[in-house]
Image (cartoon, rainbow, N blue to C red; front, side, top):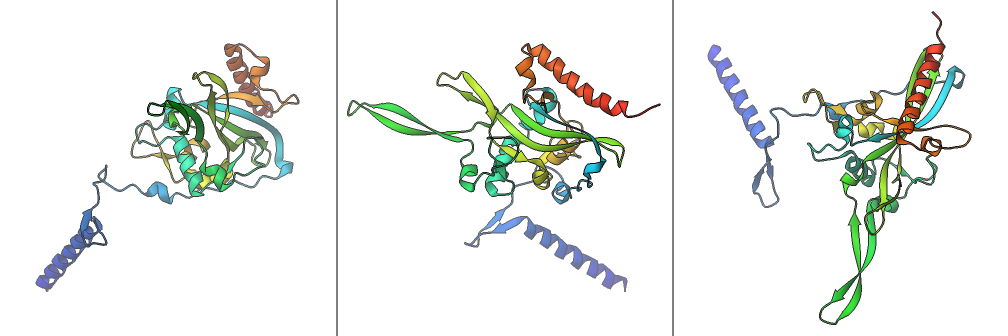
Length: 287
């Protein structure tokens, strides 16, 4: 009886080994066997691809005691925000957004306003980050100048800031101050022919609640533990970024830099607005 068990175990291990060996190879149409490239780890990473996004709890209008809409900017040149560059893994956050948009996984909105009123068409989405210039070149054979159209492709390193539109509110039902991100927009600097910055503005708007499922399928760098990578949805939900407030909802529709000209005063005003939100929650409680 022991001999049968031993033979059965050996046969099972042999079949399992052959199956694993077959999994590591691909067979082409010509019948040639192509081995898969070795993985850059000692185990397969797939848990983040199966992550389920938790739905937001339902909020009734009568339970919103306090609400403040603000805009803030993330400067990825700050050390804590370097994960948006993701130079280690080779894909930056802007490349992730553009790839997902061109595949149709997420929708993008025009920058005419930040209320997500006009959705971009497939043609508009496919041309994001691509521009065309007309240059004149000298033909040494005919001694004539010829016009030539040059295609300019966006350099991901040119995107150094992201704008966040969000709402802070106090929920009476749960007695807590919460934040809901509404939109994300990469900020692009517009340059003249000499490379000088003319102005800057958003390339497009991404409606964040609609994109949470997609952002949860892509890993973001964890500064402290490679075994526990964050997803991009984790980064925004846990607010794992440094930012500063550039605008609060106001009757003049003005930004902080419109009435604070000194850069230091802009940062101090940004911190003041943040403290006002904190004190609003604190003042609701009595001790």
